[in-house]
Image (cartoon, rainbow, N blue to C red; front, side):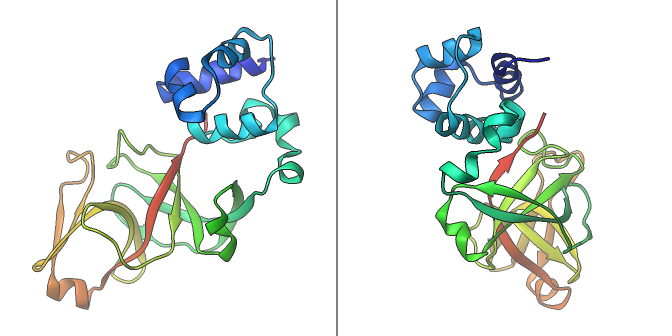
Length: 206
């Protein structure tokens, strides 16, 4: 069975993050992280949560037993995972709740956040199939934001959105899979093409 150190090393490898980078991102000293990796220590709950958020993994991946007690010791909020969103061609938006995840952002207390699974390859390498995108419900955005977009009123996709007076352009990071799609102002209005959320975070499980 993998130890806490083994799991941490796996997550760091997948995230392509070394101990120095992880220390800078979490505020946990490099020496403490080295002790975790050597198997000498297991992270306590607060550091466990910091590590899981920095590496985009669930706490239970790193240490299931400690993760069971997080809700009792730290203020966390549940947000729903709803359906899936495609990162290739749009698919019908599915709004049923399939599960919940925990976040520490107090802004999630008002129910304005949800999460979606990514499928397809058009947002690689930044977003991969199976990733969870955590989304704030909003219809306003700045040009260049990564958003959840409804096309034709019932198809959801995650894309970088560029806006201009002429219309909206949806851009995938992998242009060979999804070349930029431009919708003029008339199409935006009549199809419609509508932003329903802004991506705030990406979580990856291994």
